[in-house]
Image (cartoon, rainbow, N blue to C red; front, top):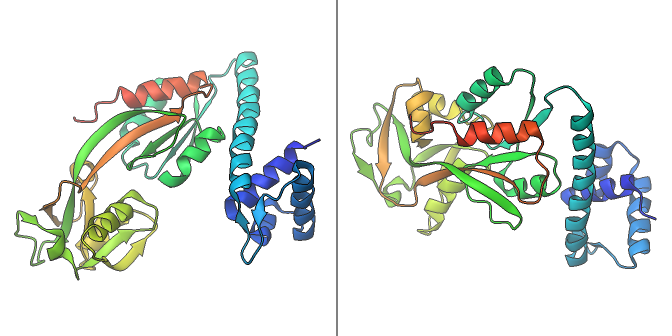
Length: 292
């Protein structure tokens, strides 16, 4: 009979597709983890991984992973529901996002209105959010790029233009608009791979058979404006950040492309049990004045 610990270990191996890294994350010996996966495959009567060269989750493994994620997610949701029903506290809400700069206002208002609710914030790439929601590892996700997955519900919060920001003395600074072709060869300050700004930059260039010249890659997107202002390059900046958080002296130029936009969207699992705290957070985020 499958043990919960075995299934949890399988999910880590399936996510990393690397036994030694999975063993390190789980803090177990690699030979022990390898035997655990082998026993699981023997119980199911089929391999879950391809082992020719690098370890890869096969089609059967991907099928099984979906059921495991949903099953363990339901168990965790059940524990939280029982804890909520038997507790006098307001509970906990777990929110994942690619960036929390956009959410500073509604989060502050939520904590003022519900000081007893514990808020857990998790950074996540948009490509991982559907998995986190299916496994009920988080309650809500906010993404600045579309998530194409079944079993999710969503509300669009904000749709806005994204600009090219330049230092004030840059040759493009006096322009009202610029084409993507004109940006080819320009040095870009960019967020790391997976972040919506980086994905948008790559999509704009790839659509024209170009590759952006990235001279500076940062883990903290809020540093992009400061690095642009310091003269290290140019970069993409959303309208929201221009209005609320950028203090560096920059020029903003319209990109002559209808695709240079972002849509900020709130997602949650269609079949998930949302706690009272999560429902309160969903109401606070969707009811926030995103235009003002």
